[in-house]
Image: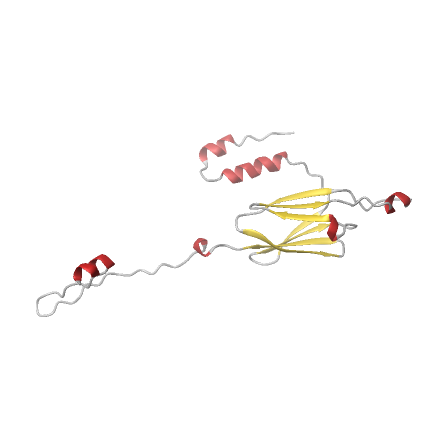
Length: 166
């Protein structure tokens, strides 16, 4: 397996520490492929992760959301039904799993639902008002016109100037 060295990226990029660590983590993670999943973009700021988890009930699933991550875990309960049953072919996997997803900044989990053997986890990106682009008005200072050869005194602008004028 080829190992990538991200040291030059750490030296030349300022503020991209998280990106570099995500790249390193992606290189180290093992891809088990179970359970299979889809990541779908529903709208400009809405996403849905769908996992194929046939055979799991809601009680056997856990979803944990952290600041920058999402963890979905399935723990199959030990019941005596499977031991008594004799399968000729067992193609539906019912093994335990843990699937982790990195979430971008300002992405949060808005809900989850289990339908027809698929777990759907809805995500929404909510950018704070302070981070959204906004238009700044330009206020040009206009001098007061001169009346009969003399200029009017400028009105106090700051609270300190207003207090001194009073």
